[in-house]
Image (cartoon, rainbow, N blue to C red):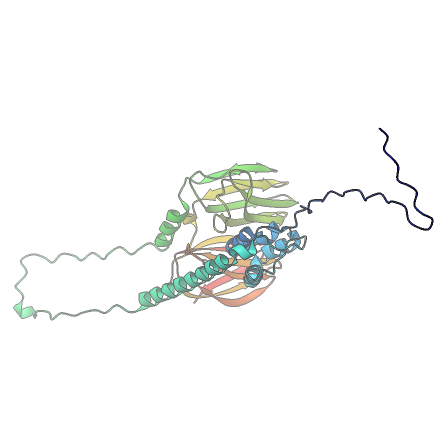
Length: 355
């Protein structure tokens, strides 16, 4: 059977048209525009933002390095970035907003407020404790019998032995060894680049180093996976002689030292409790112990590069950054009550006076 064709359209009228082809619906674009997680960025900013870790995480390497070298702009930059993150205004390097902000912003605000509140309460308690310790002790007196009422001594009176006076620095040394661990001192010498194992079981200690080369001399603390703990103990050009400490502001557990040098070097690694009490004057990097009460610290520096003074008391939420200046310095800063470890980074002569 043949299918009849439709008759031609009359003149002046349009003929039959072909129906348009069916277009299949396309699925919406699935390209990801989400930025870095808000929760991770906020935690990094709150805990280690003073070292610029949050900006490194967002891909902002330049400002991260600047934030690291200035220790969070002496805390101001750290606080500003934390507020911007909590307000939802932070963006990553590509300009994308943080992912998951609406889901966790309330928890982040509550936890941040709790941390700040606990820090304030801890500071108030410490201040009250120090004030109470400085109050003079009350003494009671009892009536003594007259010599006429006392029986005659049958034997010669015994000599009264004075109690032994405590050794200066003993209390601070005991605290430092209890906090960072003890170990047998390690002395090493060599030339050029190397890796040195730190004493097992210790979380911190003193590193006394010398270098006689002409080019860069750097000492970095590494963890068990050869990752940096954030502690750059030495970074200078040419000869070096000084004492530094590891384990004070670390982001991980340091287990070895990476040494980059072009000349001969020596290392003397000792427990933190071996550090001497605060000296009145010196030159270059140094580590000291402090066991006095809350006081004022007057300091001067005659160098041309960075001058940093930090105090580690082991108390929660205590930043301990006392001074962070470049070049000459002359000023007075508050000093927390000991026992504590005080580290000095300097390239010139300095003086310290506890008042």
